[in-house]
Picture 1 (cartoon, rainbow, N blue to C red):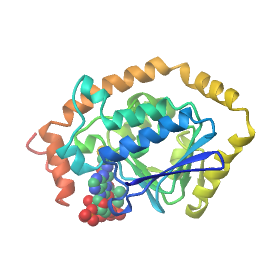
Picture 2 (tube, protein in one colour; picture 1 turned 60 degrees about the horizontal axis):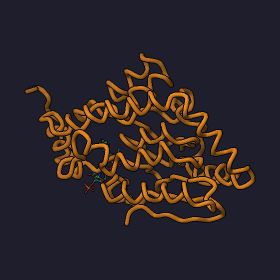
Picture 3 (tube, rainbow, N blue to C red; picture 1 turned 180 degrees about the vertical axis):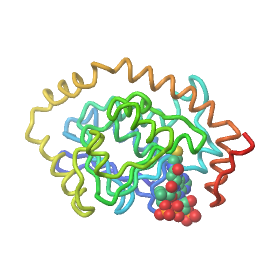
Picture 4 (cartoon, protein in one colour; picture 1 turned 180 degrees about the horizontal axis):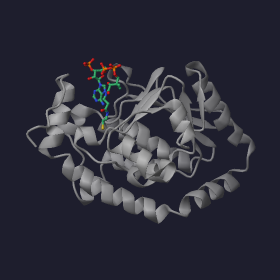
Length: 257
Ligand code: COA
């Protein structure tokens, strides 16, 4: 199992633990993380969720071999795929979710941060949403939420060109709360999560829901629209070339498309 969970002092920690593959998410890992989030939601002993990776890496995103060999389904099947179940569980989690980004957060690793409540980033971390260079499109409402955070011009640099965000840029645009030295990120995120032990859980839950509900319908619509395009593109020759190139450790060649 490459997702570790532990409940300690009211905090459910979900640790992405596959450092040999830079914490790339397989279908099994999405499923395990989704189950942990659902359990957190229903367990009164859990006051907050802490999402973390390994020293130097948060996650390199979806496992690229999985994308090639076991892509999420199309149409309504896509909504039922492990990645969707995980991201839906995160978006709908009633408990506060605190992310400790101790290193690179790429692809879905950056997308998921848009749906966390608190994000603390190591000064060495780089965040990137390189969907277009993989032949893909932004996912899980990032085509809505990233332009909302930083405006269309800067969002175009991040989503169309795939330019990375430095940790400070992530804070400046409101994607993250604070930049910290690498060794401080996890302890700080944990201290923030622990504060929920002293707060009334019903008020926390209702307040989080109110904060999210104003644009829930828009977010859900963006998720559906992007999901349909994303899963259709996943089967395109452009994506096959991009993913094969990554696995063969070469530059992709899009000149023939
Ligand atoms: N899926 C599958 N395997 C991955 C992976 C991913 N998303 N990201 C990294 N790996 C694997 C590499 O293939 C390599 O495996 P190997 O040792 O068997 O050759 C191993 O993890 C180490 O990765 P490497 O690229 O050598 O590490 P690095 O420190 O030079 O770079 C990253 C780290 C995260 C910057 C780089 O791996 C990367 O860009 N990964 C792909 C990210 C991506 O495009 N994600 C979007 C998916 S939608």
